[in-house]
Amino acid sequence: MTTRYLVLDTETTGLEPRQGHKVIEIGCVELIERHLTGNNYQQFLNPEREIDEGALEVHGISLADLEDKPTFTQIADDFLAYIKGATLIIHNAAFDVGFLNHELGLLERGLGSIEDYCEVIDTLLMARKMHPGQRNSLDALCQRYFISNEHRTLHGALLDSEILAEVYLGMTGGQLNLLGKEAKEEGSGESSMEPKVFDPERAPMKIITASNEELAEHDKWLQLLSEKKGEAVSW
Image (cartoon, rainbow, N blue to C red):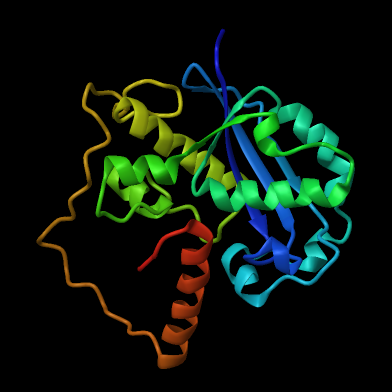
């Protein structure tokens, strides 16, 4: 029987569900036989509570953006039907599964936990075994496997799932693209996964330094992101 994989990520109002924080976005992309099927899932949710300022800086989703969205209880059955029987691929699964299980527990409808519906693969744990002693954040893995994430200016559940899908393919089968084939430059037989080298003869780039206030805000954002991803992040 062909395994159905769902690469999943969430965005939340904060870091700790036991403090009343809620899920505000669920994003999944489906992989079958190492191919993206397009049968994706994305749902924004009204948390019916304020969003922490630090979380807002990470994902850019405000409460005003979510006022007309359904609550978790309204989409729970459809979401569970979508993931049932699949194997979930999640980076730092303890964070996302913990939030989803907390949401399910709040419903008091006997729906159980995510593990009752799916097996879970944690790519953070995989990466720590494959690359011990190295940085294994999603951004670090993108760099290690030559996967571009330059289009990501803010975090989003569906966007991060799409990036993680490509990372997972690279971790489990070599340098592959989302079609499950070796990546080639258009019109040639050469792999496009080699790092690009800038021309050493180019004019020097202008350096603009950050202000003390900007550095402090940057450190605050990195702390929040490190807590969400389960390891220290430094840029």
